[in-house]
Amino acid sequence: MQPFAIVALVLILARAITELWLSQLNQRHVRAHANEVPIAFRGVIDDATYRRSVDYTLAKSHFGDVANLFDVMLLIAVLFSGVLPWAFARFSATFGTSIPAMAGFLVSTGIALSIPALPFAWYAQFKLEERFGFNTTTMKTWIFDRVKGLLLALLLGYPLLALVLKLMVWTGANWWLWAATVVIAFQLFLLLVAPAVIMPLFNKFTPLPKGALRERLFALAQRTDFPTRSIEVMDGSKRSRHSNAFFTGLGRFRKIVLFDTLIAQLTEPELESVFAHEIGHYKKRHVLKLLGVSIAGVFVAFAAIAWLARQQWFYRAFGFEHQGGFAAASVVPAMLLFALLAGTISFWLSPFIHTWSRRFEYEADAFARATMGEAQSKSEQSHSAPALQRFLLLASDPSRTRTRAAIRSALDTSAATPCALVACRESSLLARELTELPPRLN
Image (cartoon, rainbow, N blue to C red; front, side, top):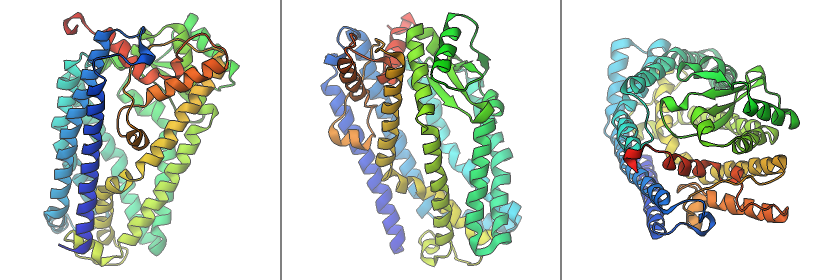
């Protein structure tokens, strides 16, 4: 085995072991607190609901362990069995090494590698989520979602890959700069039009009906100087009883979306708090900041691919022959290998990215509290993780920490209520969802 192959294997195994260790540590922590509702939530969550939330957390964690181990074994087999060089050689011999053919190889390989994950996705939806009463997806909808995703990958991904490969021929050594620029422009275009063109392919979006809630939310938007032309309701109940809200789009396509399940589960004051939280992300420029990081990441990724494409040791570590030059057939193996290894490398950076993202949530919480003028009472259940896990953010959502921050803020402003909705909306919704499950699951 080549030296870099050993390094790659060690990093893959180290990631798998770390993930499994953190998962087991979290499960142990959850079990240790499974028989008693946390002090912060006593009086707002009953014992039965809390117990079911524990069971759900553990079941998802166990399933995640199995899925992760399978993914690791599949990745190791794909990288070190020689199947990729064999498939590349066979594909090239059959279809040639033209740019359309090489783009086709990348797309075909991506589709082939996604197939083994389908049984896990099916089990998660129709067994795990069904077991706890969350699933509302039909088999027809589940299949159509994947067919639509495949068609979008072919219609959007294939031309983009072909253009990136063509840029190698047109621009030579600086191809990666042009490729990164094109990909970023494409991402911005999707960010602009996806809410109006792509998302409706999967869900139905309707304007929030006229009434007290609509007037209340638009008044909040006007009060916070949030430029929105539409507050829309998404038929999230088509697939799940889980609830959510999100802010998406740019320019005239900007909008805030509320799940219909969210509207059914929360009161108007609570929904106003959720809306204020989403506005907080906009006012604090979180989308632009994350977009900036994403843009930088694209340039770094293409620079790394361009450099790796010139390294013989990188190709030989995984059984490829290094050809050199800027022909598509010379760079495609580097692109494929980088895509497969990127998750292992980014894993070790994810704690810092997640910490930054979590800070955004705190900032949106604080904005919502300040905007609402008072803390909105809301129940929550969660499982606080040990310090190391809270830093790595690979365990459950640290919403109790956010709740305590809300409590401190409420005390500082002489607010009377013990818990702010905006600080605990994610996991608190799980408590409401568990409470409102069909009687057969009680």
